[in-house]
Every structure is written in structure tokens, then in C-alpha cells.
Image (cartoon, rainbow, N blue to C red; front, side):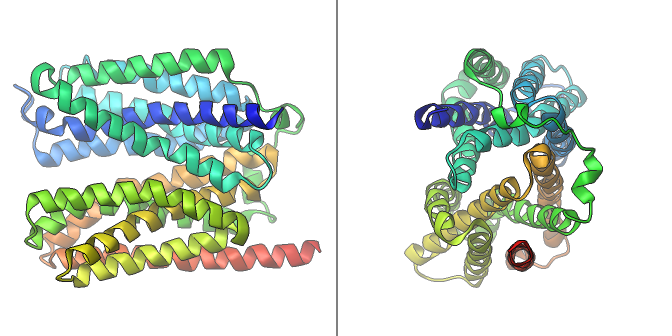
Length: 398
């Protein structure tokens, strides 16, 4: 396949992830309306529990979808998983009680979790040599882009039409992208050329056991840090006496820096390697969180620290997944991505609760920052071990 058509496949996969990002993040934009829904009696606590169910679904979906993409094909699982989260996103618009909304979000999460390893594996196998970090960055940028689209649409639709049309729009967008994918998305030629379909236990064979465990641990810690900061940053800055307008500005800075800087770190990874750059990004994240906790009188410096958190945390996620995609043979690639990304979702599930526990213990907002700075630092340590393991394996192969 030509270079142009290769990037077309990457673009198609990225479009699928944008749809997934919309359906994933739209819930946050709907929370004020859901809390006010007559007869539902939702509290912030119960709404948070419903919100976390999608990540539980993504954990299971990532593990199952990653395996299926190595046995049934990348294209098949991308399209099938898109159907799953599309159907259940439509169902969310029809929910008549909180338990129904929670169940439908859980089931939608199965498709959302499954689409990531299949889309990443397919895009990686069509991307040019040495461009895996850039390919992963392009795809993963689809999540915040989809979420931004949900927020912007919410400004126009929620005040007059309520929350249900937002799910209907998400489903409609997914249907359009599904039709496009069905018509244009090819199967991976690398997958078709691989006759062997090993069992999932091969992921934990002697050759891959250490790296599989380390990749999962790094993903858990990276997602714990990233979702922890996304969940708690605005609240923590309000606790530290910053006005709400400034706190919201911090959140926007965090996410814009995440998307923009991820492409810069992807370019650096092509020269220095994905694993070493992931270590750098995790260390920058930790330093940015520590600096924010300590505080400064300079608003410019504070915004720079928060931008550093977003840039480092999101890029560390991308570079670890890129390294996973490059570290396993074709026959195990989807399973490995699904394992690392799926297990990482446990960090996303835990992040909101962890911050709440620290605050409930009366330790104050700075202790929450220190907690997530520590998880970022631990991620850097684990990826450093992966760097050493990778270099030793290269020496053995030589």
C-alpha cells in the first residue's frame, strides 16, 4: 500500500476514535442536567458511580477486544466494537432511570474498550516504518477531540433541549463513521499473512512475561495520574482559593497542552525511542504536579506548570502504548495492546475515588497533588526498568 493510502487508513482509524471520544466524554458535559433530572434523585456521589461504570466496561472490552483482534481480524473488531458502543449510546438517550443509564454506559464501555486495541493495531500495521509513536499520538488525540466536540455541542443544545439529544447526536456521528469505515477500511495485510493464532497465554510466556507485567503496571499508573488530574484539578484549585474562572482555565490549559505537546514528544521518540521519552514525560508530569502543589504567585508560571502536567501525562500514555505495539509480533499485537490499555483502565476507575479518599481524610488539596505526583514518579521508574529490559534483549539478539 502506498504512503498516501497508509495515512488514509490511519486517518480512518483516528476518526473512529473521535466518535469513541465523544461517546466517552459526553457524560461529563451532561452531569448538571442529569443531577437535575426530575424523579431520578441523583447525587454527585451516585452520578460519579454511574460515570465510572464506562471505564469498568472499557477494562473488560479492552481485554476481550485485544484478543479478538488477533483471532478475528483488525477490521472486523473495529467495526463490530463501533456497532456495540453506537447501539448502547443510542440506548442511553432512552434511559428512564439511573440504573438503566449506568447499565447502558457499562455496555457501551465494552465497545469503547475493544475499539482502541483493534484500531491501534490496524493503524500501526499500515503506518510507515518508525512512525508508531506518531500513529498512536494521532489516534489517541481523537479522544480529547471527541470530548471537546461534545462540550461545544453541549453549550448549544443542553440549555434548550436537555441531555437526551446529546446521546442521539453521538450515536448518529458513530453511524456515519461506521458507514465510512465499512466502505473504506481495509483489513491488515500483516494479519492476513499470519497463519498462527496463539493462545492468550503466549502473552505471559517466558519471552514476554516481564514486559507484559511492566507495561500493564505503567499503563495503570499513567492512567491513574492522567484521570486523577483531569478529575480533580478544577476542584483542587478552587480549594486553594483560586476563582472558578481561573480553575476552569487551568483545566483547559491541561488538555490543550496534552494534545499539542504529544506530537512534539512523538517526533522526539522517533529519534530517542518511545520508552526513554516515556520516562522523560512521566518525570515532567511528576515535576509539574509537585510544582503546582507548592504553588507560585506568578500566574504565568502556574499555567506553565499545568501545561507541563498535561503534556507529560498524555504523552507518557501514548508512548507506552506505542512501545507495546512495537514490542510484540503481529500475532500477539492486538492482545498485548488490549492487555496494557485494558488493565490501565483500572487506574481510570480508581482515580476519582483516590482523590476523594485523600480529601475525606482531611489531608487537604496539596496532598492530592502529592499523591498523583508520586504515581507519575512510580510510572517513570517502571518504564525505566522497561528501557533496561529492552536494551538487554537487544544485546542478546545481537
